[in-house]
Image (tube, rainbow, N blue to C red):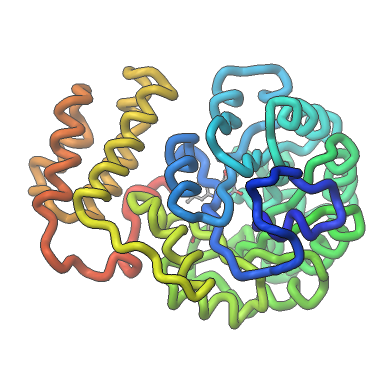
Length: 355
Ligand SMILES: Cc1cc2nc3c(=O)[nH]c(=O)nc-3n(C[C@H](O)[C@H](O)[C@H](O)COP(=O)(O)O)c2cc1C
């Protein structure tokens, strides 16, 4: 799933001179797809700050193929390279059509969602429900693989439930069909987001395939990333909730895994990034919708920065005045306690609620 992994895969490469050379696998850290959260503005910032790759929110393939405005926004990738679009659905024809259109709109890779546990997704036999019928899952992957020339990857869970931990089988089938990489969230669907992600259980997948495996679940720091890679044998980690309100985290972990020092950002630089994200949301969605969409991000930035009183925080997440929101956001960082609790250990409350 990382860029060098894509390029070293047997499928067509991204073919962009700016990308690193193939054949030198190094550990990476990717920003996870988070529906309603990993909007274009966030992905742009995370990638610029060194995330190995970023993945769009899941896009319903049929909606995208039919051209709905929401699906188009979710799949937007201007300024993000590589631009990875994640598609969700259960009908191979719509998935293939969605993939074709995504490639035509500039996607550098397509990721297939086989991990979403939400009832409204699994009820339609999409997301993690596909892990209940691997023959159908394979038909769907084959349809997507056959529809595009860019790399195709798949994101899954350990299985539907404890009695059917079939991620290694699905990963093997994906590899045989020509997919380039596999991401595994170390929980079953029936666990939703409870308990701890089981990184060691992902090892059954890394031992079953030769394509790169990305391990996901509960990674929120460099130490956790190292532990996750050691337990799973994966080539990269994928970070979701811990990066909400801290888009710099993924790049910092990626740098640390390579043995490089991540630049230490000042509170002022973080405030600038949070403001850039907020303004990017208003530009992407328009002010009315952007202000509402931004609330979960504003809450997460404020909670990680730690500088606002309870009434100020309340005002930040309820105001409809962008100038006031920006002023409060900057105050959250300016008034941040000098030594806040280690950022990587803090939870991302807004995203956890969203889950
Ligand atoms: C709010 C929210 C939205 C999510 N949306 C998606 C999605 O669109 N596609 C997907 O494959 N996984 C989605 N996930 C799952 C995450 O990508 C990830 O697998 C999970 O959160 C575990 O990683 P983490 O502990 O680093 O957050 C979502 C999770 C959350 C909490």
